[in-house]
Length: 80
Image 1 (cartoon, rainbow, N blue to C red):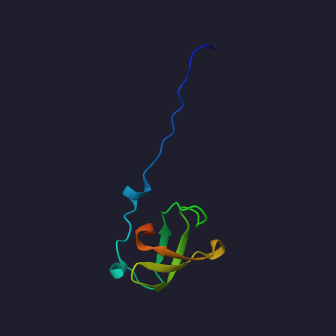
Image 2 (tube, rainbow, N blue to C red):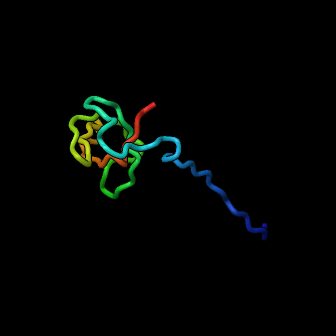
């Protein structure tokens, strides 16, 4: 009982498994995407949505019950 035990957490890196978009050239309106960002006050990480409108540096994504968000391309990846 006097022995210290270190707990470990397995953390998988989603960015390696899901490459993100760098710009709007390879993405289309109506495409399903996954949000990989972690912004305070923003949508939940891992939320899925549909692209509604494309801009130069961001997309408007409808995430259903989570809401509609303006998301930079580098936080979005394709869904499997």
